[in-house]
Length: 222
Image (tube, rainbow, N blue to C red; front, side, top):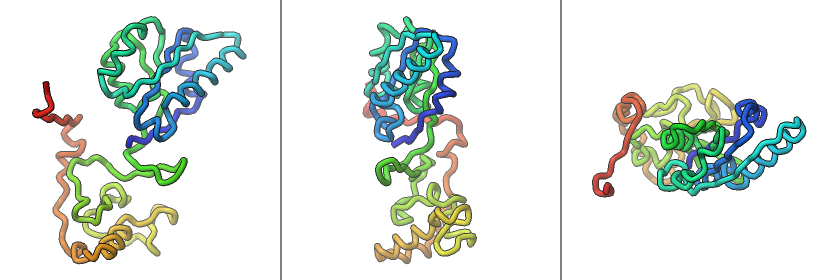
C-alpha cells in the first residue's frame, strides 16, 4: 500500500487560512489503512479546524466527505454536484489522489493534507516500513522475495557493499543490511546457490527515467 502521513496541522491551517468554505475529502484505501486520511482522520481534521477557527473568531463552513478512492474517476464524480460550492478542497489522499482530483475539477483549488511517503507494509500497529520502489523490473524471484532496490540503502544488486557491520547497514545500527536479509532468506529456502548468480543490470528505463509511467491493459479497456 501507499504509506502517507498527515502534514502538521499548523501547515494545513496556514494553507487555508484565507478560506471560509472548506471541503475536506478523505480516501478509503491506502491512507485509511495507515491511519492518515480515512474517514476518522477527516473528522479529526475538521474538528481541529473548527476549534481553531472558533478560537480565532473566524468560523468556517466545513463539509466532510470520504470517497472509496481518489485515484479513480468513478468515485471522484461523487463530488461533482457540490465541489464548486467550496473555496478550497483539502484532499487527504496520497499525491496521486490530490492530483487526479485537481485534474477532474480544474476550477477547484485542491490542496494536500498528507505527505506521501512510500510503498510499504504494516509491520505492527502504528509502524509501517518500505518494501517496494516500483522500479518496474522486479528482482524478487532472484533474491528470496526481498527487494535489493528497496531494502539495500544503496540499491545494490549483487551483494552487500562492505559497509555493513554485524548485519546492520552503515547508515544506522537500527537498519538491517538488505543483503543480510536476502542471504539469510536464501539460506532458509535452501537456495543459497542463487547468491552466486550474477543479477543483470537493472533496467532503469522502467523506473522514472522515462518520465511519468503509464500501464495499459488492452484486454480491460472499454
